[in-house]
Length: 365
Ligand SMILES: Cc1ncc(COP(=O)(O)O)c(C=O)c1O
View (cartoon, rainbow, N blue to C red):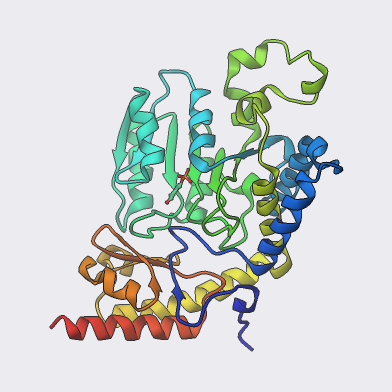
């Protein structure tokens, strides 16, 4: 029997929600948890406001367990970009970066604006080969890339990243997993990546204001090197903070938001990331078959064996208002209209998507 997970979500009948690459939906149970949590947190008689540090530590334990990192190398941050900016502030000014052309601006621009030496690698069907050749020839200190590209959905082969790390053990590999984590199992400590970060509001289904960053043992010992050789904070209230904590988690965090992320971690664990992967894969293949037969897939994505569930449909962006009016939540990006297929979607959504595309293509003739 095919599982249908949309019973966990409140999606109105007239909405086809395919805008997860923009922002994802939250399960019904999250909304209930948030109402209770907010009331209990601000109740004058309550103690939750006094337990914020302990609460965040528990969130990090759950993240670290699901994605195989250790709690002291997992950091709660308000979003991917804040975490990433803090990470690169910890590198010396002469660190050289290999970037992917047209990657998400939050990755590339902070490198450009800080004046780090950098060069670009082209993102096409030969992404992995391009990376290997560029690393061999130019010997950058850091490779920086999104695991799934936000415009095209191009997904890097994760086995390749492991092999790359074996071939170049000194290369620091940083991955943006904002369009990836929440869609399949991920074992950070055996991934080859030195750092992986994400925002929580897309595929993690955790709403805004939360994200996290996982850092390898090796990289954790290399960043903020000077600061790490100086004394740890002496004040009692910071007694448990590591030097890296003082950079990545310098102040009070919103426990409602990070608690929502914890609810997501438990929700994903409850269903099982393998099951989620299978569900997404089955629906995505259905969509790819239909879209390929209409020649609506980017050529370099069509030929790639590994495909993500973020799809850029090659229809005119002029269709966007009409698709929205028909209840299809999607977004114009690059040379087409971007959709994403997640846990709350089912076959009916894919059928409706294809019907709408056919209708609007026909109407535009
Ligand atoms: C690849 C990628 N990284 C990061 C983000 C979002 O980063 P932030 O939540 O820090 O704005 C997005 C959002 O579209 C994205 O596609």
